[in-house]
Amino acid sequence: MKAWQKTGWQFLSISLSLLLMAGLALAQGKATPQEVKAKVTEAAKLLAEKGEEGIKIINQKNGPFVWKDTYVFSYSLDGKINGHPVAPQLIGKDMMAIKDVDGKIFTAEFLEIAKGKGHGWSDYKWPKPGSKEPSLKVSYIMKVDGKDWFVGAGIYDVTKEEAIKQAGD
Image 1: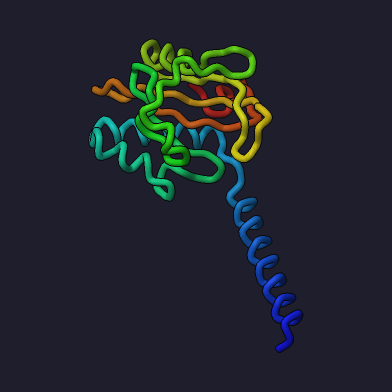
Image 2: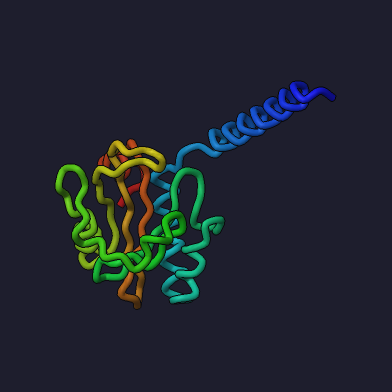
């Protein structure tokens, strides 16, 4: 086989593989507010039962709390991330000084929800994965029973009002 033929076949093979992966990603679709609320509730129960062992499960990049286009994260009630499956470099980071583009300290609102009602939705602006431009993001937050932690998961391009209407709260 000539070199150009081999290269052409490799290009075709790679192109078909990329198309297949893109098709699978599209087939998975976007997470819904109902799914977010259900996964956050499941994660809160897991952490209430298993403690630190549960955090290890939350941190699994290919684990049960990473699905479609989102994932569950976990914070301590002092505003530090203790579980993040897609950005493990954030674990241990104090998020209390981090603001969105509108100046909103969203971690403070997460804490207000967790320490107050114990569960609810928060909206803020944050870049989608792979983007530098901020987009509307809404996260469902839930306090973990018996722990000084809360869990959450977020989705993009849905308003807080739409999320509440779709998933209830």
